Image (cartoon, rainbow, N blue to C red; front, side, top):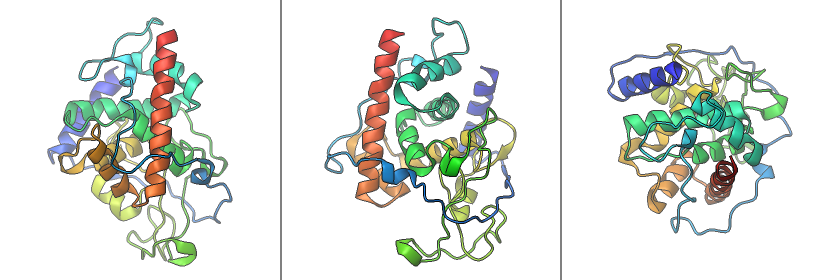
Length: 268
């Protein structure tokens, strides 16, 4: 509970420009492209862009929107207990759910008008890195994958965008071109702008899922966007990746995760 409260304080300060985060690099090594591409395993939802937002999710922790998390029947920390409950029906690792839920709670305090949902963050996390498990990685209790998650070189080949090196390889391990890094796949230049401290350790690390999820939430909420509205949701996801198919995949995942959580909490 104290850790979660600390996170809310941090994000409020960041939003107001009152805190400088030290971006931490996890010393990644540029590695060959894995044949496991999480997005290819996900079916795009048959939904017209801008027509509807995913079903309203049960708020992280089992609370009603705009309220503090409720204590679950187990009597344990509400976010951990909620994550363990929801993991069983959604297939999302509990540790990843805690990160997505924590980001929702923090943004609910910092930017309540955004209404960013943990389920939407989970949809992005599934497509980008299979919730921190890309390329055989295992997401640890500390929120870091067992090996750094580094995407393909953005060199313009194979249909990918060409982005020259912006960090000297410090964040992505590649001094020639940029690569997306971490569970939410930030390119170095974008991470520098949105670096966030989701676990309260005073550092912003794109490989750490609490930090990455909070940064993604802040990115999606930029410009006063309402992520609960159809227009706001689609605009936010397309700003993350300007692909209709990508957004339709995130929609299907977010909608399914929210419904799974509703079913789990109705039983629990």
